[in-house]
Image 1: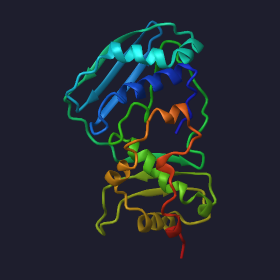
Image 2 (image 1 turned 90 degrees about the vertical axis):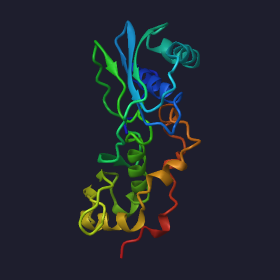
Image 3 (image 1 turned 45 degrees about the vertical axis):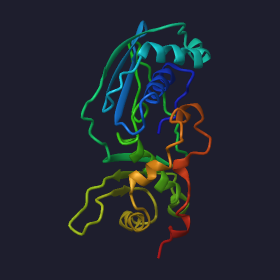
Length: 231
């Protein structure tokens, strides 16, 4: 995942997206995207929740909490344009490619669009809308990077099964160990039970991905390490 500098325009939009998301029940499926247009911020989103947010109140709380970060990027105050839609059918996101790394949060060049800056996946996305998929992929790799001898790999996460009832996941890595052997080990050890995995995150504040990326994360627990053995 991209390491977000909270004291930047990119940091503010991603932090605000997660801050708004934190005001929606975690059981709801939600996607919030914030776009900084300099003179105002557009808050777009969809959620299964029927509880309408008071965005002006949330903005006031956000500016109170993150006054220093806002001033660092030259924002004293901002207006919002609320485009959040409620009681929507929001599809679960549980399939896609995830680049996983030994260091979960990776520094990337911060390319700034002078006209606007939008929050980006997985920030602003609820657990069932792809965030859990990303966390689980990192959870798996955090058990294996030493064994595989690589610092990163590309992982295709899916819950779809083939004719043998094995998950149709894919591994692309530069490890000396064959990708198919890695895949077999992953399928043998990990359950891919996202519902159970999400229960571990009930008390985790998603804002900490940005605020404290180097602190211990519940989705990086190495509780299956004794089973990660090649034979």
